[in-house]
Length: 216
Ligand code: TZP
Ligand code: MG
Image (tube, rainbow, N blue to C red; front, side, top):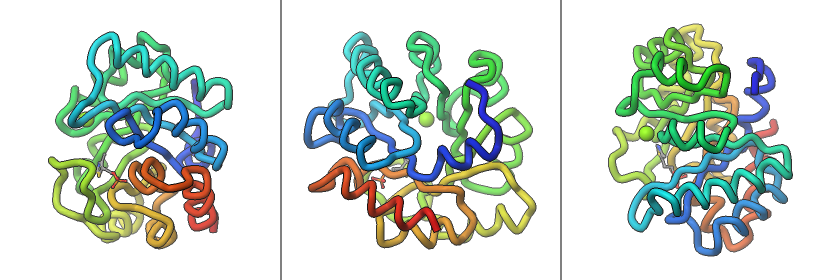
């Protein structure tokens, strides 16, 4: 799937990320409800305590991909390039500890490539090496990822835009309907969210609330 800058910016508005450890109900049901609420992009991130591995992980990925395809929501795989290729996902998201960006770009061709960055230097290197979008965070404190870098606040987002970086990017980490607007106002194209959607009493309403805040 080839997307241009503007299409990607739109896809990043409400970017829902999850795997089975993040869900209080069946992941398939959570994803369906999130899509009904209006998410714009989905990332399968099967990580953390109790995460599925091997065939079970691939099977869940396949089911979630099918749900995304039925609803025209692009499907991104976190870290696992082989799984992304096996499922013919729409893209992958990698961190600084994963394979080098250039190598992943070669492996995935024109699929969407997202890269996590924590400084202007990391952002520039990722862009030069072929990233389509960046993930910046953690913006706020989060319990979801244990090995995160220091909380960034909004300063990294502002710094990147002030330094002329125009590539689409999202903020991630502790984002919910009460702080999403300021993330976008600071310069992000959208927000990436796990818990504020996956643990919500009503998943679709949570997405709706986030979307209202992000679409200024
Ligand atoms: N990367 C930086 S923070 C984070 C990831 C994957 C976790 C975000 O989860 P939540 O529950 O939306 O804070
Ligand atoms: Mg990673």
